[in-house]
Image (tube, rainbow, N blue to C red; front, side, top):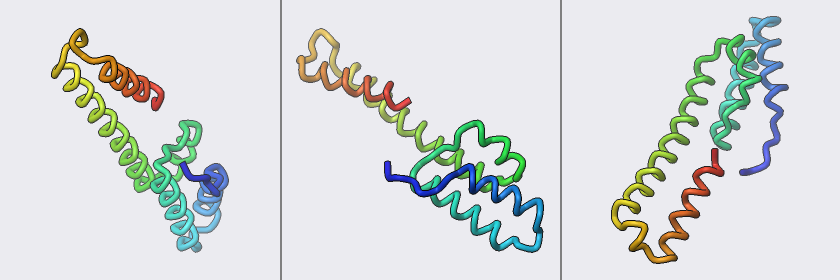
Length: 116
């Protein structure tokens, strides 16, 4: 993953302050939100749960929608991997698999568990 030059705590904190203190500077708030969403989307990052209170305080459904989109992508990727592994297992019983096929299947299963 690429290095990230944003501190999510700072951006969310600034968003909270801007929303509470200055209703007139809506353009700046929109810019901060777009920066945060762009960074999260490009790097496929889901914010830690400890930031959820700040996000909920901001009532930013757009940000939550993007987070859900990223999670849906992860789930879809995992489901495809599971389907591929199940198809491989079904296509040939483990007793008939060559050592190479067994090793590839084991590697795929280990990679799957490491990504969690």
